[in-house]
Image 1: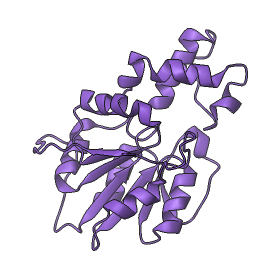
Image 2: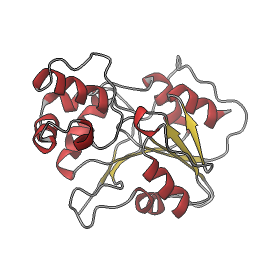
Image 3: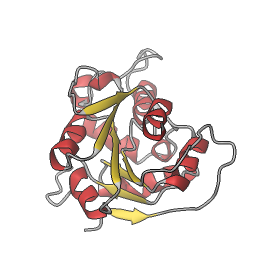
Length: 221
């Protein structure tokens, strides 16, 4: 079963808010999507407020990755199916600045590794295309396998894609994925994107970043 597809556009973004200085070390970037590139959480909460819990505060933020724990009164499987099959799922808003992202993609190859079911792969492609993000490939992988025995881990995907002699840069918002990458690929540089659900997680082997701009400063300085 195929869990990846390539997509790459070339181009120089002149007004991106990022400056690369000096001679670059060769790097490969492996980026999570939900909670890092696209605002899945915000759209999901809005959907729940509109369809199920109308008095949910406008500033409500998820405190756990497990939706069954977050919304115990709801049938989360039903909510999930309705949400991912709606137009809203192909229009998740960006958490990154598209100009600086595309500038970065002209400097280093960027691979997206997203932890969603195979059935939603096309919707995820549509969403990324909608925002005109330039990247090398999109792959499905992660710690949650959706009942698919051959669903790969993120380390599995990176091991297949990695070119020897280049630095591995990994960014995710789930501690389990970060721990797995450091365990399987100890030479990699791992960054955890701050989200409300991961604030209690701690590990000296990864670097926390507050947002996209913070991440950029870490990897291009």
